[in-house]
Figure 1 (tube, rainbow, N blue to C red):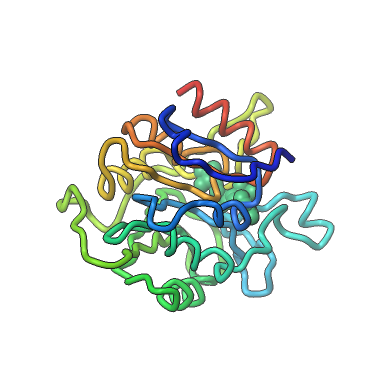
Figure 2 (figure 1 turned 120 degrees about the horizontal axis):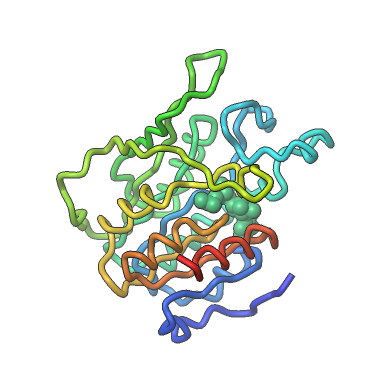
Amino acid sequence: MTENKIINLSELSTGYRLLLTDCVKIIKTIPDESIDLIVTDPPYQTTRRGKAGNSGGMLQKDIFNKGQVFTYNDIDCEKYAPEFYRILKDGSHCYVMTNHVNLLHMLNTFMDVGFHFIKSLIWDKGNKIMGQYYMSQFEYILFFRKGKGKKINHCGTSDILSVKNIKTKGIDGKNLHDTEKPIELMKILIANSSKENDIVIDPFMGIGSTGIACKQLHRRFIGIEIDRKYYHIAKERILNF
Ligand SMILES: C[S@@+](CC[C@H](N)C(=O)[O-])C[C@H]1O[C@@H](n2cnc3c(N)ncnc32)[C@H](O)[C@@H]1O
């Protein structure tokens, strides 16, 4: 793994900086109150016993068979929430995606470190996944702010965001990433909570949807991903978009 020792914000004149490393470590090198927006989709358990179930988590079947669920899913939000709060500028927004299993812990943790919980948005994925307790069709997007209030840029946006859950396929026809988020969804959040040239960070970048959205909207972007395969896919996608 290429360990990048620090994040130097002055390098962001090029538009984006992508890092193959553990975000929990490297985020500590970001100066206080230097980031305009956090938009991220952290890894999380999809059932209370830590097994993936069938509700759309980052399941990798070979890992699942060995008794593990995800390659990198053993991260408690208590490890990153205080850093998220520290690096954000006063009056900035933070969007964190999660599911019902992690909702309570996530909310409590983020509010304990100082975030104000504005509301939850709903991502209506347009597809349904079978389950014992109603079929699953949405994900939570927890919408927080640090410090003073700031309106979103397009107040007419509904808090139910209906964006089709279409996954990018590799040449083998398989999903490049099982929890890829649509670029259009990320664009709604970014357009509403930042302006051109702002610095947006996604510490759990996956294959880079947030980065592509930033590039299209002319925001500067810091993306961090611990998995080498996903990091390289993200790099390629962001470069070529
Ligand atoms: C739910 S996925 C995000 C998918 C992303 N939204 C996309 O559209 O591709 C979470 C990602 O976080 C990565 N991850 C897990 N732990 C990490 C860590 N400590 N530092 C950086 N990335 C990590 C995982 O490898 C995974 O790709």
